[in-house]
Image 1 (cartoon, helix red, strand yellow):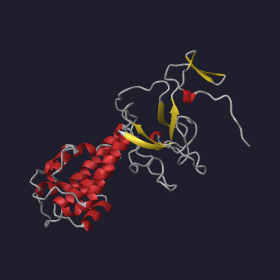
Image 2 (spheres, helix red, strand yellow):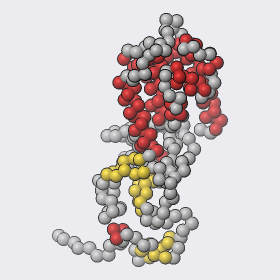
Image 3 (tube, helix red, strand yellow):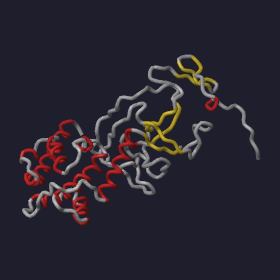
Length: 287
């Protein structure tokens, strides 16, 4: 999607929000127009449901917002007296459209004295939100799938990879299951939709990639449904959903790279590797 398409989509969301909540704003003692002003309407809504204005930021964070919207729907229902499990389920299953019903129901009243306690559903969703934020912007777990880094990392090794040292990349795929990569575990079902896409953007990092660093990246030529899949080929995947590879960085942009007798030369000089990364020239074969 280009900028114009995103802008039109944003306006459409604002119109839908106004149509489904303006009477709720009035019942909560606010002005009707406050339900129409972009961003400001979300800040006011947070006050109505007695939540921190900082929640507004989470509504605009890709992937996280897919979880935050159900959380907000549940809190709206709670603030207007719809506190049964059935109400919560209807609010989520209808993708928030159930709020349209209570918006035009004259019997619905605002409960401004409602306690700021969370339902079980909300508590679970909060936990997923926090885990998704950590998974996307702070640290992500990986399991080593191949033996290309043997002696340093072995097949099956489990490790946590920092996202913030080199700068976390914000999600480009906006519709995807949280904390899942390219396929839903134990299935052959994609965990994302290719459309709509956000442009590439990376947050500032604490350091830059240097030679001999072990890094995780998305394999540029990946065209399979998930790593190790031999049935699906030619699949066009977004950059952030391509298979994750763990490799050692031997050169950075601007360097010249040469391979000679199994040794790596960078800018004409032999690359000094750690003991575990040096080439192995002799093998003992036992039969």
